[in-house]
Image (cartoon, rainbow, N blue to C red; front, side, top):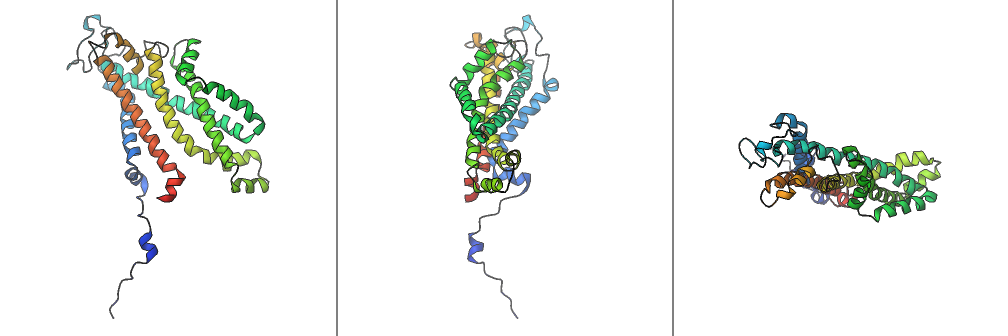
Length: 296
């Protein structure tokens, strides 16, 4: 007897295409995240391997070799003190990436704690948010400059200054998420079942704040690297003896018209790194957006 294959039913036809599974499938389905992660991994490799990729000591002074054009011996040229710009750019990746990741982590953790307290306990909400509003009324770069003016120049103080400037935005984001979650039915059900507040925060509220917080952390990382470069460029950030992309550009600002390469190379590295982090943030925002995940 001849057998015939079953014809596809209407629900089978209307089913969306199955997404690829696994890490490789996730990257194929999200090219922005894949491209941004690839660029960021390259920058991380450069920062870690700087002692082996660099040609000379980035702090070594050589007055006789100052302001040399890019060549086979000095790929990115030398600055006004004869220092190798190529080596300084590689070592500068360490400082800029460290500051970006440290600020993103500290601001996210601190802002998360403040936002959870403010959104959960109504009595403290007014006081905490007025303090955050006062900090947000000052542009982040001006607040960071003011804080750095009160302390000595160091990497640690730069991290603290930028973190304080970024905390209000994280705390307000978390507070808004917490206030919306408290109106959900499953939160009311947990409260009616006798769930205590610490357990309610830990099991029902905190997990739902991690998705928007992760996206915000990527933008904070990119913003922190730009802010550090601005602070170092105007002499209020990392000490000049420590190579960072902002310090390298600051050294070349007086010679920009005749020696533009001094600023060009660190600016390119900074732009590529910020682009990589922002691409990852945009990709994560699309992936973690529940409205888009429901329609896909």
